[in-house]
Image (cartoon, rainbow, N blue to C red; front, side, top):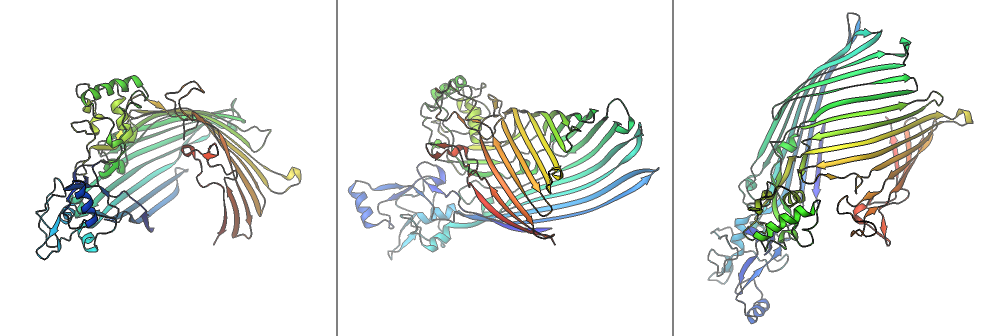
Length: 637
């Protein structure tokens, strides 16, 4: 299989020269004698008593702030299988080989920093022409000196879009970066039924899998040399190999034909031993079974110890330069908030005692450069889980199945991408905080580098904020899932066709996410994670037409589980959001054996979000598009 695609980035953040930033992005200094300055501007500045001035600008006109990427996907699969008898018993064997590769090339533009420095430091030559100079009256780029370059063309920054094409060609560089992902998998397995227990065939399957995953990121020479406004971006690559041995056994101890006191009982066991060249060995296993006291009801359950190895993306993603804001946790309105207000207040008191000018924090309102990427030291996620459930199929209601299952998961070392907000909270909301060195009060504080005044450093050449993948502490979950399915023909009502009724109800009892070890936070019941969700399904079908309807339910959602007051005295304008229902419907016609026509309506109730005095509340939009209709034609060849 081969696939080729292209994706266009409609907009990205431009570069800046501003007093809000430092380094190559700092404001520019100019003399009133700058030859690009208009006579009117020069007169105004001179009359005001200025001989020099500073210029801040968003460089929207210096480079194309869009971009695009091209993607080539290759995949091939080869396999063979066989069914055979051995000792009079049935067996199966299968071998497969799978290879895939995905190549991405990202294209955009960047400013050549040295050429920019050369081009904005200008003067006049003997002929009165505006030219680049290495000896300007006022150095336009503090900290950066121009160098002689015959190719330099003067760059006019006094206005939007006034720079000449020659100057733009000199300071703007086309850049690209290539990413490659490869996967190679060989799987062989063998199974069958070697013997019976009480006349019931015992099944097994065992096998071996070899997997190789590779990834690489290669920026062009311009980016590798750091000729733009970011740090030099080195190529990065990584790979790991997995060798797995696995097996499972299914033993039907009692079947209906055994004519025993209970209807049926079966047990199973599964195991998998994995060797990973990055993070070592692991053994996962699962055991469980089911029992039917009578044919109408079956109880089931299992216990599983499992793991997830970090992906090649989480391990080896390239370190990229980002632009981010940093929350001012010690601002007067924030320092007594958070999951544990007294801890934050204590840590902020120590921080502001050392850095009294650290708030208001400039980085809270203007972005600063940061870096984010993969982490080759990540460890496996490890989990223990169990499920208990029942399935009811009453013989007196043919076609009806009702199931209820309880699920409990305890995950350790969950892999998370740590955001800047989580880093800041883990710094100031952490009970472990060194008041003698508050800028580096703990490991999380050290991920946000500050200057002598306590402000976050803004330096594209050496970004002060580091985020990315880490192993968190724990993730705990428990919930209930109930399902109902009923299918019947309507012959008894002298109607053609089949009626299918179904429904799902999901209850989330607990979801606790503890990434940093600071005030573990339950998210169940909050925005985007309601405790109750459900769906009812109705479908009617004849030989050549039918319809279906889906009723979707989303339960009440809290704004937060923290800092809650007694309603209506809660300080939030919105303490919780109402539950709601949406409706989808579909009508379809089998025009011929090969041609089907469908009419679909999505969100018939046109529920977009909860309203507040006639306006939609942005934070709880469930469907930004609203009611919509579609016609689909399907042809079988």
